[in-house]
Image 1 (cartoon, rainbow, N blue to C red):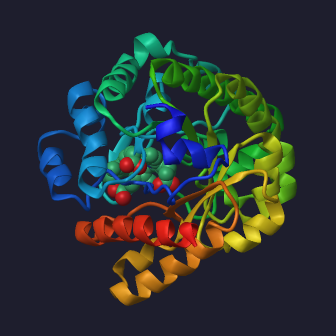
Image 2 (cartoon, helix red, strand yellow):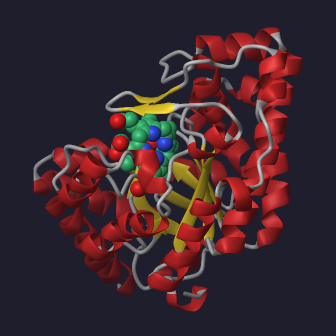
Length: 347
Ligand code: CP3
């Protein structure tokens, strides 16, 4: 799979395409009965640790939905386990850590692992997929703030009080943690690309809980360093977070080449803020997947007409597919995006 035959890779570098590329965050998951069947036998982590099963699960949405990119099946917590922090993924809750990080000693105990040794199964999955896929493979990692939020809170959070307490009251410890996570992400991102990932998405899902000033002081320097180190790999670097409308220009300055936008920011507004020299990805409200088809279709049409106004647009949701979504709707939506964008671009 080279850029010349991938509309996804072309859109990432703002080259013209004949139709809008589509993929969905959480495109492999519980809305799919075959996935649920596999989950009866294996936990999420067990799937991640078995390259053949993991590759099969990664390919499922490509084969069933006809999306234009695959995203590695894994979780943002996998490298956290390799750093020596035990976690569990609890059904309908998310990642839970029994012994969260609260002190300098806790941060010092985290180790920088060797991806080829400690996460060999991720790299082997990527290598296998590169031989199996006819669309590009997106590798991913969590970004430092979002990873730190799970490590410090010990689980999902609404207000990130403990995370912000550490950030504001022990800025030196916070900086050590950001630096360590930054180095891990650089190592892990490089290893994924070396194994065959053709783009990397950094999920900073929860960083929208920070003000732009706090982002600038406590997160931006690490993000800039990560992008400076990953840029020479020459693959698109996508940065996504929820409720990050006020942070989009900082995402751009940090060095992302594609920005994932959630549904709270109209694409037209994101364009006003970011200009036309960056690719955008998003941002249909995932709840629309459960609206009547005519409503979903009308909103999709509107989104495409805004997104396609400039080269460098990738259709996606504003966040992940919910488990209650009907797979047939996702399939129909993918086909609709392809046909409607093709007509619109041919005008
Ligand atoms: O298809 C894909 O998108 C690739 C696989 C993927 C998973 N997690 C598998 C998964 C990706 C890219 C992730 C990233 C991830 N994990 C993020 C960033 C994206 C986002 O949603 O904001 C975050 C915050 C996590 C942490 C996490 N892991 C959460 C919040 C949950 C959901 C808890 C629940 O049960 O609703 C998980 C579990 C998880 N990771 C599932 C999947 C398919 C669902 C549960 C399962 O199958 O056991």
